[in-house]
Length: 437
Image (cartoon, rainbow, N blue to C red; front, side):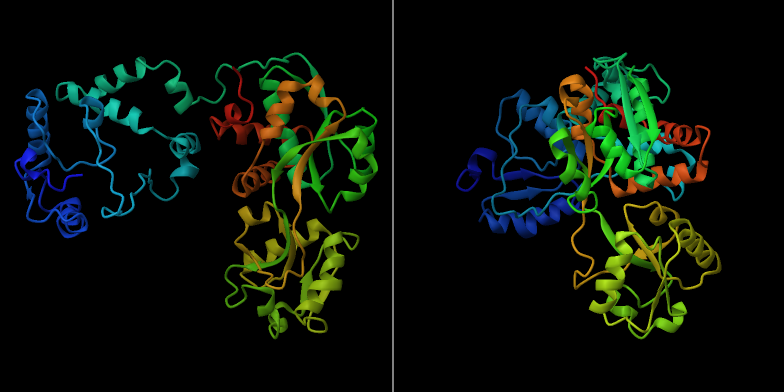
């Protein structure tokens, strides 16, 4: 729209410092893209001079074209129009990041979580910048404090304090029965939610059961809810048997995956295909888990055949704990090890293990992890149902929670205590998972 309107603006575009990258893009690309060369002259000045010229023009209600960027407080202070760039001559925008020294998140996890979740809209940022601009020099902190005071609740949302006043849920006081089987993600999420529910005023009761008895108890109405149903494959037999008496609340993680993994220092082995001819490095062994595990059957019947690894490798049946001990010993000595693992699992956040790619898809498609409940759960616990329906966890968060529980030890309430400490180290997460009001 600027083309042919140069006289209205005295043929000038008020620029900023000549060394600024924006000025180079404006002269080399933008003017050419829109045929504005010759009609407009870019006047180099300084950012303060450009803003002063903008202020004078607006006071006098005169047209002016200035070089600006977003975010900037000028958009909150003045009634300006950003000129659209349909040809994309200015290029794609950038993002603003918080950066910190190495180790900062470990040294101060609460502040690190605040900064990780920090977000301002353009309107919020520009209004804050304007408040500081309008304050006299040396009073920037007071201006920021005044801006915060004018926005009640904003500070608590940005920097929630662990152990602060707890918000009670709508169904506070209700007892809810939860059960889990001793799988790491089930232990982690159950004790996470036990802590959250207690904070919200519920009375959770937790017990451990094997998968079969757990699904049976839930179908009979003796258990309200559980967080670790792997569907559609792993727990398909239980779901098929009891689906008419159960509720699928929703999936919170997926897809899961089965895999073989090696330490990251093992070079040249990034996929299952790379294992062929490398058996001697691993003593010809794949460290397995329980022989009854479905993953072991798939490994022997499909994966080894698909990649021609039969004969070169022997799958050693053991247990999950033995497999993890083998990984621990190998990593401590920086020795090669080939282990049977799966995702999600805390092994990836504790040890430098890399998942071997499966280009032939021999492992098959992964499951999703669902929250399932007894029939009628939604009607009896509408608030909790909503929280669990929207519940999600990233692999990184789940892995770190599992690792924290492993480090804290088992039994005598240690899992719950570790989950509590992890939750406190992630301020704001509880309000995300169980919002009230």
